[in-house]
Amino acid sequence: MRELSDAELAKLLDKDIFHRISDAADSLGLECYVVGGYVRDLFLERPSDDIDVVVVGNGISLATELKKQLGRKANLSVFRNFGTAQVKSKDMEIEFVGARKESYTHDSRKPIVENGTLEDDQNRRDFTINALAVCLNKKRFGKLVDPFDGVADLWDRTIRTPLDPDITFSDDPLRMIRCIRFAAQLNFYIADETFELLSEMPKESK
Image (cartoon, rainbow, N blue to C red; front, side, top):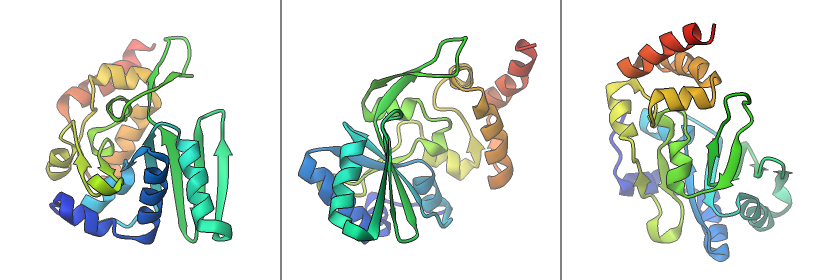
């Protein structure tokens, strides 16, 4: 685990692929951020080639523009039903998705999806350590957005949900399994309020 300033994050992201994404986003007037596991692993000093990019707007359009910039050395896959796209270049995979907010009904795991802000997108993340976002636009390149103190939880080696765990786990029960998996993989502690609900929900579902 290392402490990283915005300037240090900008240096770590000083790679051709991130500057290409930045150029593509700025050319389209779109706000975009690298999010989730890639950012988490920068702090944990773990290698990662899977890059998730949240776009405030149309993620598919940004992926398409990036493909144009990269030319034949990149492959583009578009999943319009999910509003996502993937660009593969060399040994990297970049997933693009528009910022969104999701809500679930009790009788279905299929979410109701609406366009949203970066804040909306971070609210729907499973854990605070996966809700970290770093801006890729030139004017704010390297700026960390950490509304739930995910960096502090990394230092404390703690798994915690960004919202009330009842909301986070009710929205998608598979997150309970992910919680245990992350704790085991990273050797992290599960926060008391998260663990308490983790223990109670299977009983409530019987």
